View 1 (cartoon, rainbow, N blue to C red):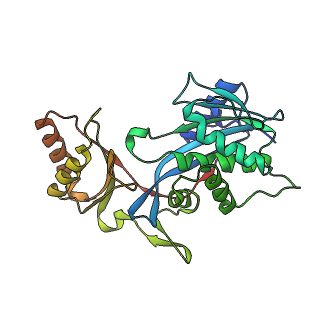
View 2 (cartoon, rainbow, N blue to C red):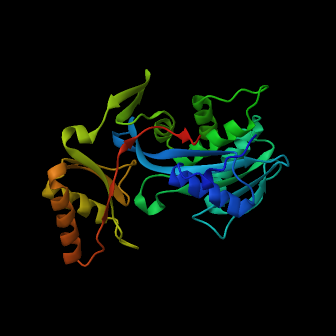
View 3 (cartoon, rainbow, N blue to C red):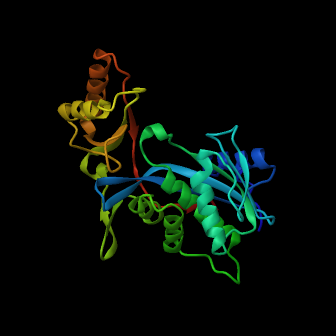
Length: 293
């Protein structure tokens, strides 16, 4: 498979250029493929999901020795080299889910030769959106491309979702669906009749969707409830948790003409209470995982 000189292509997406360069720096070779996959979130219901314009990216190059070398910009001192067969050795926690997926795919014939892989997320865990599902989808798509050939067709996205579920059965299946099948400006409704795309574009209603992220360290489980209550009093139209339960963030739908007022109100209330001011992160409803050409 040919290599991609994305790191030096000025027209490429900056995220793709970054992970391509990071792969070269970590493993002394350019990528053969680079994929990105969006973070996803629930839209007030377990079966209604959408993708956000904050992706993770995976740059990969094939090997033929049955080893995988994993590296991440978030864990620069903890790269690892691991076998795809035999008893799994000790490995860093950050690599566990990716490694489980790679071994699952190798077991059914995808990626048995191994690869060099570099991953990066544009959001940290503190933002409250799960990076696990977009990461596994980006990796699965990269592996499928690297190792599919004439004798073994590339698996469908549905098949890759099945493999990701087998590797991590406790993952959020609805979020995987959003990562793999989302459309810009649409939410994905899941149910007994399959997938259905529903229009979900806050800009059409003079609104802005934002991720409200609390920043209190240590005990402070009620910070997000306080922040949401403050935002609602200041004029937020709606608020909901991006996952199954309250953690550190919430999605809030703000009238466009009230954005500054809501942000200022929340900040003033938290400062008055001696607490760290939450962040507001813009969210655009994005499309599914894609490859850099």
